[in-house]
Image (cartoon, rainbow, N blue to C red; front, side):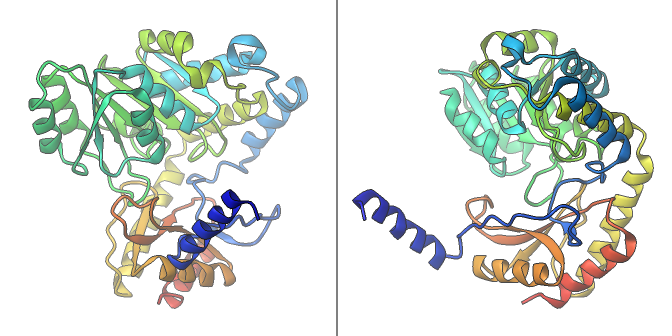
Length: 378
């Protein structure tokens, strides 16, 4: 075996020994697994109106966008979705990317560059971390969800062009960032605030408009919002919602927008259909809130240290990566899919199961899934 391949084999063995191996598990259409691992919070991925909108666009446009947004990839479907996303989020404009990951890379690099300062929450998603690294700016990691720590960092670097980067609902533990307090810190010091609203969009705020709207920060000139369209909206893609000048800047300069093939029109139309459903889905949001209470009560009674989620993500601590893997596998063998988060996905080096609540799961299946999680616990 070539030397470099042998080196990769050694690295793989080391990861396996540490319980950090990852595995692809293809699922068949219509499988009967209870899904508490995916991010389809509102159950809209299979909603009839969403599927119909996507099918109609597929028939009209064909399979793909056929090019980047600036070549042939922009369609009337893209423009309509961006218009309604901006209206929903209360911003001057919105720009759709082919993934939430690329939207975050593009947004961070648009707001900060060499010589600037980025203050990044310690628990931020990998896409935000990578955007910070790629920006060329000086990056300082702040204590998790701590406005006073952010203030201290900014005060120690007066006069710097600065951006504070955070999630609204954090993707691993599901807790809510103190957005209003963070904005008080940034606005008082002339810094900008970038919020990844991926796990709050569709769930928090009036009409599910997200954590930024819920915090009363919608449309402010120093706030930029990003989100994925693959969670509560059940599709794919990402969005940057911001003042019109920021959107113009992204169209002109963002490499993750300019050089990437556009999101397929069929996906765009399906997401747009999901947006219409999500805005009036207070019943689904109420169901998720009730299920959050039920889950916390059931797991607390079983002796687990869990807290009520801010939206749809609930974290259950595991003693270590091997135990977390075994626990998730035992649940899967009994027909329940749960997330298994281990380093480096967990910012504090600990492991846990991550449960994502899903309004599309029938009540009986949801209750059974909680029983399975408790019964399979180490």
